Image 1 (cartoon, rainbow, N blue to C red):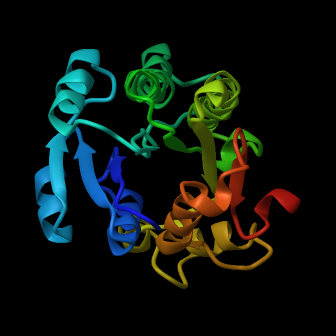
Image 2 (cartoon, one colour):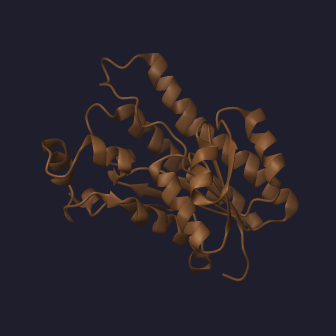
Length: 240
């Protein structure tokens, strides 16, 4: 790494966001951790800058970006995972809410940040957080999985149109991730943990550090000829 970059991580108050922020900080990058709530506390714990930002609100996005200045790397990590329901039962309002956050929020962040990159001549990087669920269905999780399939499509759309500006756009698509919250809700040895683990050929959930490592790689100079991909970090789950 020749010089420190400014890296914005959305949804940074959660376990994956914190791991991503930590990984970039350890490289010497300047990290701005954002979230709709809890950003300042999470950022203080990591020794980085925290900003409140609602990815579904254009004015909130632009206010934060005016404050931050030049962005070199955007990590679109923010999203909803807690809205579940089967096709015949899910309220339409819940479906719209998850699409508004996971798809339109990712679109708005990408659009507003890369507009500024283009205006400033910044050959930047965007890394989206997707999910293997966009390619492998699980009953009851279709709303979330549909949103992540759309994130993969948005990644490819952004990559092809921004390539002429030297801006790369990729995604990381984890399987189940062993965040602190998941570890509490599904402790090791529990039937719920075993049900998830049994679907994974490598027989373990993804550590948050492995997801962060994939994000850091795609944002690095080692990946300068990679754009428009969605990289699974799933222990082989898509193979079965």
